[in-house]
Length: 374
Image: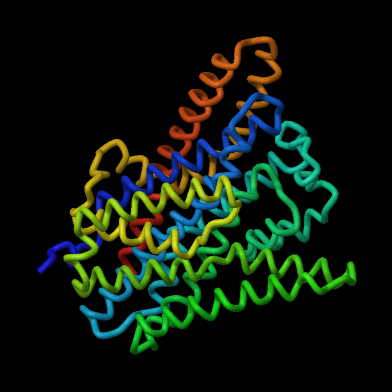
């Protein structure tokens, strides 16, 4: 019997989350460097789907952990308290999210220092009220499809996760055959997404095409099938299914090799399956949770970064943008090495500090309140 299936917290998964957080940080630094005119590796990261697949990794962690905890709740208590789950998630996500939105509206919106010269970042040409309403009602992923905002667009992932949290506990509570339902859901979504994308190509009317493109992008970024794939693996983990296979060294090596291979294939063929990537990462997450991983993520420094990663993620884009602009303007003639040291070093230190302060003094009081709804 695997004793890990009785835990509510996995140190290694916090370490894994920290690695993903660092990947997202690196990707966005290179993107901002490209925007402000500093030599960068952004094109390489785009072609290898580095950023896209890193975000898929965050969705995998959410899908795996949330499914595991909900199924464990049903196993231990006979049912899933959906309303209590909503309250716990609201206490975890909403306070910092809305605090940042207020800061963004008051200090960042319309400030040239927080604007980008790329046309797709020309958010001031759009209705501020419309964009902010979408953010305040929990749909930043919809706002992201309309216009990119340098200091807000990264919150689209929070919108996707909130919408997943809204429907997933209901599905798990009333679904008697979780594996079968999740498999059908994944196949149905893949069929709908690919079918709609193909159908959209036949739309020629510009006014209709705008909305068709918007729906197509929404379907692409709403990766519930990735979270469902992670949920299937979480079910296997909780019920000790296929342990001998998934925990084997050979299987883990195949997963790692496949993930690397997918990045390489993406570079040459510009396509990668997020769903397959999610399944492979989920199997690695299961090994980490089960203390069977061939790579150890049980590091106190990684675990701490994973713990404060929400605040780190929320703050990182505004900090990277401002630091990069300052470095480019103040050290215009300096070497690329010095610019990179300053951008990476100062941005990381400030973002780490913001995340630590946020967790200690702002998030923790709300996290303690979650205990009322266990």
